[in-house]
Amino acid sequence: MNIPVNLKYTKDHEWIKIEGNVGTIGISDYAQSELGDIVYVDINPELTEILLNESFGTIEAVKTVSDLYAPVTGKVLELNKRLNDEPQLINTDPYGEGWIIKVELTDLSQLNYLLDSETYQAQLGG
Image 1 (cartoon, rainbow, N blue to C red):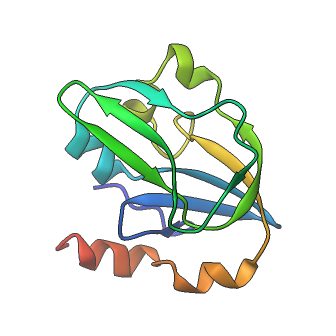
Image 2 (image 1 turned 180 degrees about the horizontal axis):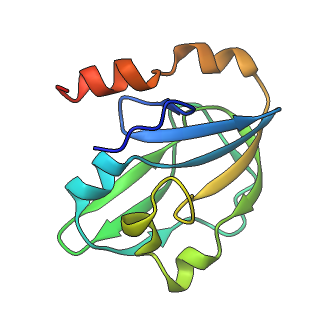
């Protein structure tokens, strides 16, 4: 199981990579493997803000649909438009080309409540 140490994680299996006050968000390798083949990512293209622990969209796999939960509150900067035509990028590269959304964080202290890689791995039973 790939769990990069430079990321923070939620108990719901989202990850966030912080660069300054910008966060890149996606779902973990564990989450994509549990979901199976991802066929669609549904995020409102008009979305301007995400709120901590609130759903900001859904991810659809062959057999299930799962909500995407915001690990932080922030202003939406960019959606990964490649996922419109290539949702399988989340399966093949969940921490790289399969990122989902980029946001400008409004409260950096929210990062203190996220899991580091060791804690996330322990939660998974590893």
